[in-house]
Length: 386
Image (cartoon, rainbow, N blue to C red):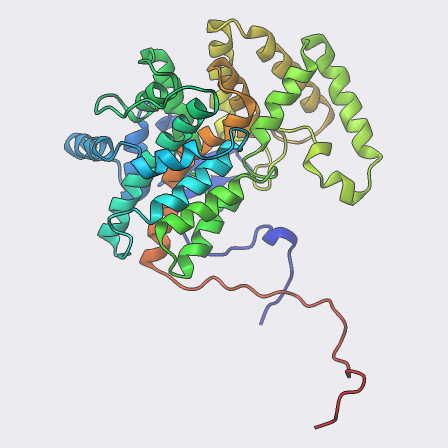
């Protein structure tokens, strides 16, 4: 038996999947064989979700029926609304979301069933529950009333309505639609793998999504876009970007290996376990960040981001990842830093559900082994020999 150990399971094939493929050497991302740059902006987020769940793009009738099914599932259950109102106002948005999804599990009409049709119904409800909770919590914690769900509008436009209390412009709704598509799935990232591990035990779909949200909160996974936005605001002036990068990299060289592993010692938004060149999604977001920053008067922040990007390219071989330019887009949309990862979850729940459905369909308990590095077998003092 091959028991070769790889830290962090790097490049270890843990399962087979037909959902997403990453070409790290070329910086390409494919959903069901379709390159992400071809999907983003040409297919709606709802159509992309259908593709992830069912394997093929929907035709006109299928797309219409699927979007209608998602719209019919909209609405925040009253007990979940009451639970959110009881949370401390300084509760992190991901903590509120995780708690709400766990609470909603006990209210779900299919809570006692895990066959495919029941799980598809749950997946639809989770697709609408997550944005409803994210928007409601943002309003509650800022002293505003949650907005009632409506039947009209795309998934992205409806989320913005819940968040801001007014219909978004078509341009802003389209930007968010592309962002959700870019974040919809990314193979066996930490949160998706956590969801699959939960499903492998035959846990219910809500439990799998709760596992994913809890994993997403970690600063080495979904929290990086918060750190990017905080860093760009700290730099403030494009003229300071190069010196900031120089100082951060110089300080990092003086750290121990353990200290360098702390995400706070890194330049957030750079480096990836799989990509060796710039993240395919970052290339799309860079153009969006430029246009959105110009349209909203936040060109200075984009200029800071460009300065950091150029300085990092000149000094390191680290690729830019999806978190870097998405932070600029989020800022242009008026989204506060600690809320960025919740937007990520609004898109990624599509992939979590896709992987859960795939795991349920061909399931085996995920149970890896550990390489033992403790003391060898030894006698316990005073023990009576058998």
